[in-house]
Image 1: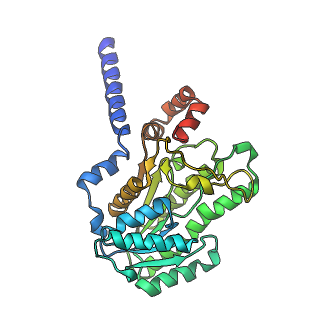
Image 2: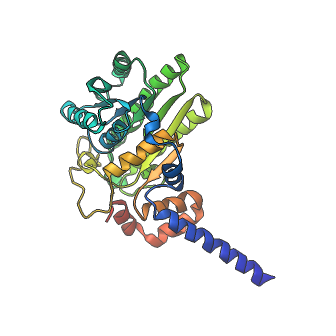
Image 3: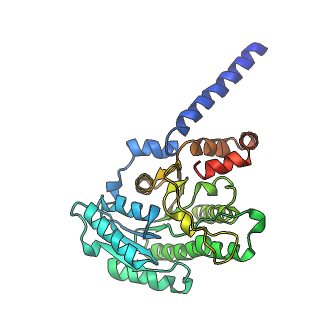
Length: 322
């Protein structure tokens, strides 16, 4: 009897371990992978108005292009107007003639100007008359030792990555409610919002805060779709703009060609699929990021053991894709 019990237990464990390893070799969570094969295509969003903040580069740029290829009308906003105009040209060129100049609206916008968020929103409404989906993509990451971070940096990062996102989302939510629209709020989080990322204490805290805010909204207000999208390490220029431990300082380094990172184009495509299928939570990344996420989310007790085995130094190398 004891032998049978141990046999069943070990078999059950090995089955789940093999399944986890197979899932971890994908570049997205299993739900998004299945939806990419059997779910709604990105083209199901054709004709919708999608507003993407932080769209001048990186994931925001490639998300905009992925949507434009499928006839989605776009508002793209950021501080850098010259880069936004390049993104607009790329979107129109990639749309196969389905989008004209008026279908991609360029909005010069500083997310930190919270007092002007209503004005920005009204400018989008003046152009398109509606907003179907708001993608909160603007934000900055961080590289800093937890103990040395100046509290002003915590406040500055939260102001941009959390409070600006929450404020603009509330404006969109009220617009959806006033007009009886089943709207869609989308937030670019991070795998750091699901696990604690070393040397990014403030950034990790900010992403966890976003999950708390929007999970509460999901349970409070049923008439809106909410998608939390969590990219792992991605090949963008984000390291140059990273917060550090010092107010006003930037990390000012570049992603290396040898880093094991998902391409921004692939991330943008998967992001568009997550939006089209209105997923609640999706994550993407290269191995072993997905493996760590599955363990961390489904087996939290095992996660503590695994992280001890991995060690801080190796975890840092994984986090930096090296």
